[in-house]
Length: 236
Figure 1 (tube, rainbow, N blue to C red):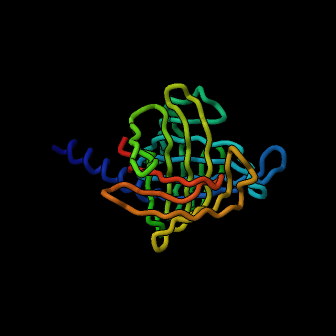
Figure 2 (tube, rainbow, N blue to C red):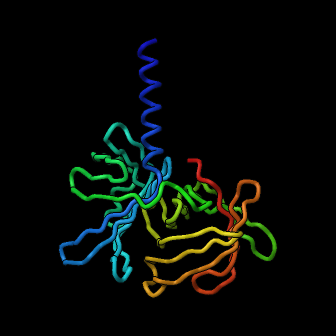
């Protein structure tokens, strides 16, 4: 009975720690070429993404992510995509962190991350998978269980989309930055875009609506084309 009570308490502590880390975090470092690099991290209760990009120009450098959990001071990640090393996809990595209020330090590298938000105020905090599109007035569903995924991860102020395949380990593209939600309008402010660096600095406004638990996202794409997407909360 004591062992069971201890296990339940440990799980509760781990869950609370994970919730406390949820949100957006940033670190600015100088790389070996003297370039100022921003590392932006978004954590939901189960999924995470980390991205490196030039802090001045927005030039995309790298990204990786997948599922994560925290046990004590040890972070364990199951890698789903990694632009620097695709052989890591499907593997589990662990590293130690030190948590001090609104600051997290990666013990091995010494990189210090400061909290940007805790999951608010944006209304779309969480991990989402594209689950359909509307074309010619009809919804075309998409299977979210397949290896080919388009995922969006949002904190309270930051967003990032990632297109990748966990089976082939192929990475197709990503973009991200900050966002706001107000009066049915969802606005993205692009800080990096792996496919086209000229998009950096653009602000894109969309309509958004929650219908039966799905995020309906409509407007014009970064290329100016009409679009209507449906996104579902990622469950697994």
